[in-house]
Length: 171
Image 1 (cartoon, rainbow, N blue to C red):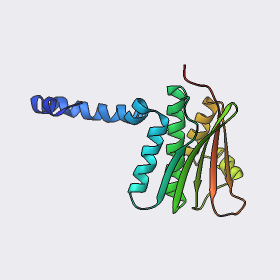
Image 2: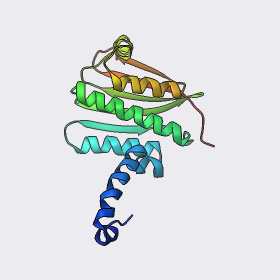
Image 3: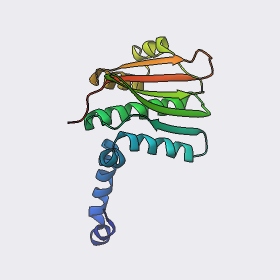
Image 4: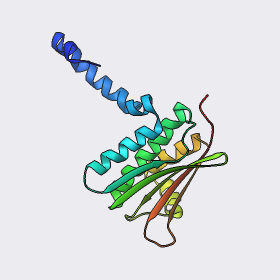
């Protein structure tokens, strides 16, 4: 949308448009709205990688049948929160998102090589007064009737967070 003519015509109107536009974009990111979860997640990870601070990538397998728009938004918000937590607390050198489908479940898995937590830590933080972001993740998982698994790889070289949700294609 070309906003410059509006700004030139009425600067006071411009003061109201930009904040509303930014709020609208933060509620439903344009890439997610226009192109779906795969594009929005890939875009997020490309921006992280482009910052030069770490290696970030996203790869979707078998995402031909999209989730409902509301489900995609919830999953995207979960991914964003997990990524923010990992970047804030874990000091990783890499972070990688994969998506897979198995029977009637869809999986989103984030791997990273930073400092991490495991399932028992996640549960403790989720039930404490700390970890508002983790509580948001847990409530979104519940709305999706999904599950979350937080673990360290057996080789102890990286952590992984797996989101499992029922596969309900968009109608």
